[in-house]
Image (cartoon, rainbow, N blue to C red; front, top):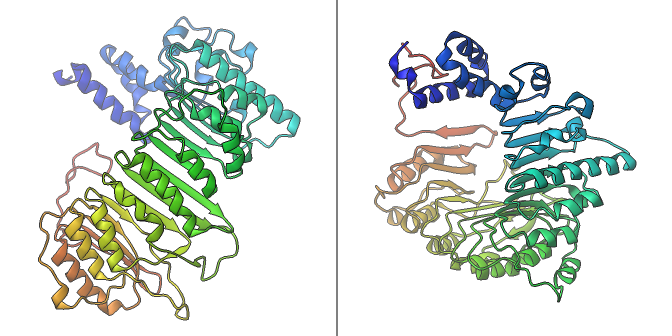
Length: 484
């Protein structure tokens, strides 16, 4: 045996990579049996992530039961286990668990680990009558209370999908140690629960569906004269799916200069583009110095014209206040409204965000010839971005790729970071070659240029990349052996 494999850090790294590849994972058993020095590290990997409780139950009568149980760091339960089958089931080092389907009805002894911090629960696959849903909610609430009581530091991360009963809602509202919370629970998240969540002192990451919560009702409940708790004191990442008035009501509760990443999802039959204006105004007043990522989704769910696109166009006007967010690094706008930005708008926007690394304004699908729409942006907008956003790496937008007059061309920006450009549908393929040359003259470091022709084919150009036959081969695809 090579002496390097007696170094713990090197052996750990090798075993980690073996464990990462499903097709090689079985060799961990052989490794554990082949060398006494490798036995414990290999067993640690074998038992660290279990997708079934049966291996643990099978060891209960073994003299090494405690040794195996102590190696389990993460477990997935998909089937219910009952108290009489796990009377001695203790997983002292369990750090995270996933409950899916029948696993949500499991007995709770496994949840007594003082190291347990992360829990993921998926009840969406369970189709139960109201009485059964009530009992399931009680069971899940009991699991959460057990973890909260026995864990050294309380539950840190909770990801919950499915129906929330009143007892479960009450329990979630008491989990004040949470640092990360995801609730994808349809219409069962109440305004009261959302208000309680807003006061969690350590909450950094929140994703929540709240499309059914009325903003006025939320504000009335939130303005409790007897409450002195600070709302969202530590929130850094927020993903909220709701109507636009509730978005503004939630953003109003943010503390200044704390939010770094925001993802807003607005879905509905009567969305108004202008309703984003007060939301962006409030956001700019709360997070102008801290905001790094902003993703806006604006999708009509009612009757849509023009192959899924609404004629209610999205202009730059609702976004004007974002000029104050000078630290922004990523901006994404996904919408069923046609984005009606001009080259002058892009020039203005590019002056707002000198640190921008990703700009995604979406692309149009292939539209029929009788639809009277043509991209309003031209290659001139790329020149503005090259000049003002020198850190830009990824760019997506609908573009008219007609040739730029020679007077508008600029010299190459040799230090520009742009690596990927996607321009969507192009109507005239004869312009593509000239367009690519223009791009290379402005962004000499670009690695990928992607566009879609009228027949629906996607064309990807990778300037300067060697052909596969010319590229050197170092190792095989799985990375476990040297190539020819």
